[in-house]
Image 1 (spheres, rainbow, N blue to C red):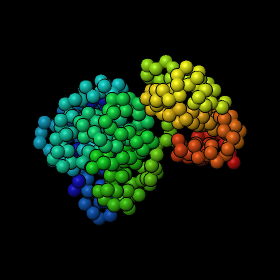
Image 2 (tube, rainbow, N blue to C red):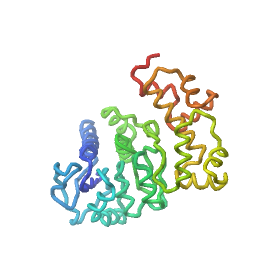
Image 3 (cartoon, rainbow, N blue to C red):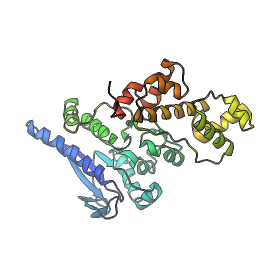
Image 4 (cartoon, one colour):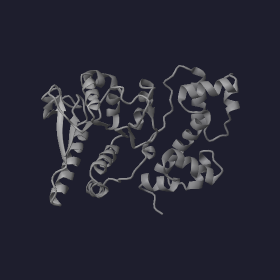
Length: 325
């Protein structure tokens, strides 16, 4: 039997806690119905008997106090709610416990922004990680020694797992079910919970807002120009001249400030504009392509897919209810 410790930190998101327990308990029921023994023993662990969750009003009762000795095969860290620095400070006493379990041989999995608490242990240093796309900038700035894999739904490195945002936690839970049981059981669970078991990207759900949380006024000026004039022909030389910086210095400063090259930034702004059009209008693919400044259908399709994981047609069908073929 696989022993799972579901950590209950303060401000944990209750839906993630209940969903995690529900998934493994449901798999146990599948096992029993097929004449087998339950496979997962999942216990809620925390430093209090009753831990306040994200709203500060709802409490969840733990099964085991973290001060008690415990041997587990897998520790799962649910997502935290609110300001990450505050949430980590509230739960700093869990950090040595997580490290201790890893040192004793347990695997560790973080769900969504639970990656922030996992990152505090140092166990992710030099490794790849996934988290909610809306927290990429904060995570990268706080933990530069960790590689965030843009768009990743699941990452795995030496027995340490992480998932992307929101419902991506189900993909990691199913991944763990398959790892510890078999593919058949994971597929059964995916059908029961209506989850696309092999979804491997959260890019289609990302919203690119541009990284402006920096102190480089010339780069911000260039960003604002791009976002206002993305449909026009924009060159690096033109932007560099506009802010009176040499091209080489401008490209270096732009990359440092935004984590994107100038070309990547322009592409992402164009794609974001195209996404909004596909979501809210009945314009055809060519019309949208021209509106955002592309003239080549193949190039537009490839760049759109690069940043969303979907073709323009797939994206429109997915997010525009008013569209009919």
